[in-house]
Image 1 (cartoon, rainbow, N blue to C red):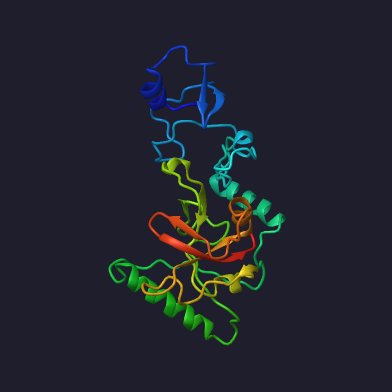
Image 2 (cartoon, helix red, strand yellow):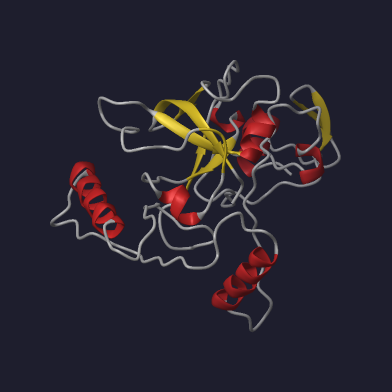
Length: 251
């Protein structure tokens, strides 16, 4: 499938484009359809020009393929979004979720912009909050995260990144990784195991401190099969160059 813009700009609105063979990454593909002009997927990504079958993307001959996916679905008539979320969560819990499922309490905190405008006041608030919760007598560990696993509440970024040793000019060619912002203590509180290296601490992310990041087992396996991940640098938009300091279990 190709986009309307691609059909227009690259193929001059050729009425015979269907069943034509085109080449992507020097491999032949057959055009089976042209999407409407207003269609964008992922949402708000007008740069996407072609959509390939999943079987093509997971082919081992494509080292740059995106191997982390968002799942979309069409609701049955009469079904609600909340019902679908509950069923999704049930399916996810039936498999090993990779984190502690009992004796964990969470809450969502939203800060008023009038009192906490800017990043620094928000960081100080959550650092103080986590410290006070940790001091409670019945609490073994506390942390914070921008979005809990399997939660529709919070901030969960799906950011492109450049693996070490690869030069990828086009943002559309970069692999993407689901990204969450965490505070020290999150992995311990959630029971997410450390596989290699170390967990993030209070010195990571400081303006004058280390700029570390932790990746999961799947990312390590897909993008670092030939090199040791620990110590490698990831180039991430809006975050700069981050050093991989640890690998944790999949969630």
